[in-house]
Length: 136
Image 1 (tube, one colour):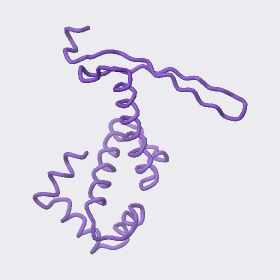
Image 2 (cartoon, one colour):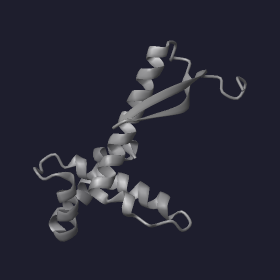
Image 3 (tube, rainbow, N blue to C red):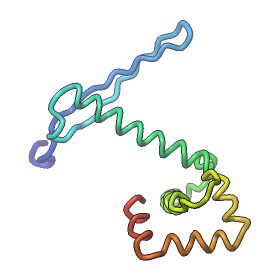
């Protein structure tokens, strides 16, 4: 295994314990770490940071685009829609002049051609398009 994964620092187990009412739920997850992760505390911190980012992005995509309600499942449609939603989210976040929330910006772009065109020009301007593509 070391031959294939030269930067593998180790494998760790994360035990999560949740208490809901009188019931205690225990869950075990396994994760790999890079060679930069040298202690248990570093491993735990890296895991928390990863899931914090993952959960924050998922929550935003679900609230703004209702991603959990999307029923695209045929062929590559689910992946294609995911990429489009992330591109749209990055574009909506680039509009720093707007005081509207992200969901309202999305709806506003759907209903107002001028705003939609301003977002498109913002997305494909020389500097903004590089930033957006890096975030997708």
